[in-house]
Amino acid sequence: GDRLLTASTSLVDLGAWTPGFARRGTPAGLRLRIPAKSVLVIQMHLHPGEVDAIEDGVVGLYFSKAGPRRLVRALSVPPALGIASGLNLPAGDRVFRFSDTFTLPIDVDAIGARGDAHLLGRELTMTALPPARPPQGLLRISEWDPAWPGSYFFTVPLHLPKGTILRSEIVYDNSASNPRQMFTPPRRVFWGRLPSGETGAITLLIAGPSQADAAPLDAAVTTHLRDQLLGRRDPCRP
Image (cartoon, rainbow, N blue to C red; front, side):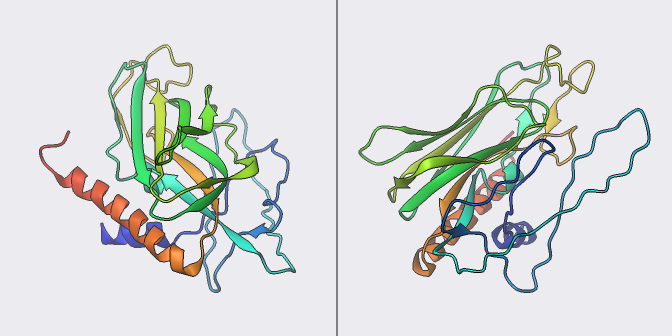
């Protein structure tokens, strides 16, 4: 548990890319910060084919000459792609709803969002519930395709005040009618990095908070992940 918490809070997410996506930088005035001596880890999702092939892709990092006015930060709900959320998809369930919430301990400026699921994901939605204000939709993907992940940036940054509840909901289809179903007949599926398992999270991209505000945000994220880990250890929970 401690190793998971340390790894989750020290990771800097640089984003995702799929063949066919155009190169895209961060919005004006925003940058990603990579601390000195960081280890860069690239995770690749490759699919089996009928003929042998060689992967010879190149990863490019573009460094800004000017210092950033603000940094981009990723805030995932649930944290760590749902590794501690107890994701458990019953066999044959065509509409399985999985949700999680996180309360912002500080004001943030949201600049975009992205979703993450594997083959059984179908719908992804993130909604902001600000105090004393109507709900605000942040992301809605009605037909998820794992071959086309990506980040979506808002035309205008959205200010979300302290106390706003971020609610993520992901609908999975673990039935035989799902064309991406890997098992015949369908079987119960748990969280897993490989395509035979599932992940689930929606990430809100925010303009990085000040150093003073970053501490309570880091503490809230760590507490949220720790609470999920402790919940999974409860023998009374499924």
